[in-house]
Image 1 (cartoon, helix red, strand yellow):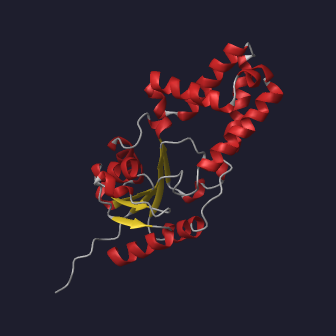
Image 2: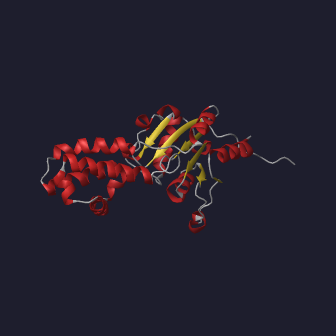
Length: 237
């Protein structure tokens, strides 16, 4: 008796931060770089605020204005504007500070399996990305690997909202059930994608067991792109 195997997906979409590269060390380095810039170009801000104080002020702003969840870059800009105003620094410098931060924020180091995996996948399916963050794939030098790249700050909605997943599918010209979404976050990525009608793969690079806490059942759990490709071939070949 033959076992039914699903058809190959027409598209595979990816989260970016902590799926294609580790983000915590990048943000830490970017904040150090920004603080050094402030010490040189806006010394009154640096004298009045530590890196942690700036972070706590941003968190407070986010709590008061949760719409900033859709645009973390705008949150950081608003936090700097407030700090510059408090310190009596020229607010015109904030855009230069943001340019400096974003350059460092996009200096990511891809996981070793990512580029070979994307190159193989792009020969078989449409490849796209969906992110709540503010990574710039053009600045990173990876935009050519993706047919579409949907970002929360551009669309005006964020994962796990089904609308952001459906927008990416629509831009690719595929139905949700014809797409697979791959990400590291059990709730934002896996549950969000599944509720939008996509299949979802949890890319669990750390060996975490978080999925057991949330009762979410991914369509697959993979530790890297090699396992992802193996799952696709086994399940849909």
